[in-house]
Length: 296
Image (cartoon, rainbow, N blue to C red; front, side):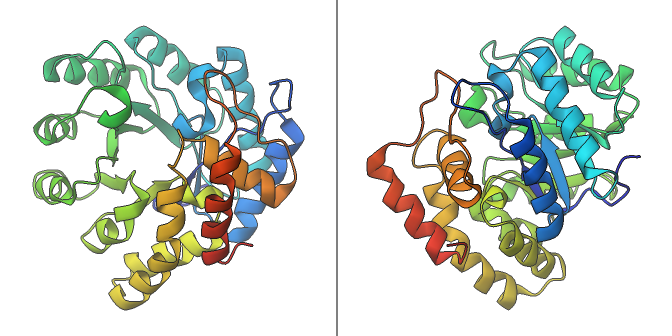
């Protein structure tokens, strides 16, 4: 069975471990899932941007989601990233993912083809029309070249099956604008680690996080404090993580995060082209941020 916990709190955008030859390291992936359960992560998001979904085949995509679901064994909810530039492909992946006991899907805005706001509305509406499980929107214009504006999010919040959004712009004013106009049940999740604590303190329900790959216990504690409205504790915990929030983006994601996790768990930091492994010059910076966060 799928995990039955709520979709909130510390939600890791899980890396996909790979061997030096570029194949999926299934044993390492299973170990990571167990580690996140032990460390207090609330939700696992498989095959998001950080999971290198853009460079995996559909068969590999399914295998990663399948392994994560199997290994969680109902202990945590699992979301599957299904985003693509093609509405038809998203629908295919959504239907495929829903053959597994996932809690829902996370769908990034189409990249490269730069649809209009009406095109985005129609895209997500078409996906929701076939989905049997909750669909979460994902807005990250710095990566996609496409910005899902608050007014379109508000429209989509009225569409049956669309359950929330991962808002990764770091613009906290968007949270306020959307929150005032959507149903109380609509999930508001941060996709920006650096501002996630404040996002939750202002009424968001969680963060889909890169930093959680490296410091899951600390991120879970920060999220619990923020969701409880404890600004002082959340701020103190977040302060120790700010170095990671910044340094994990010193090179294109997930390169630094994968290198850091590989350091912790002793597996390959390999990524697929066109990404490269972390440069030697940036390794001390990432290691220093890990030390400041208390994970080394």
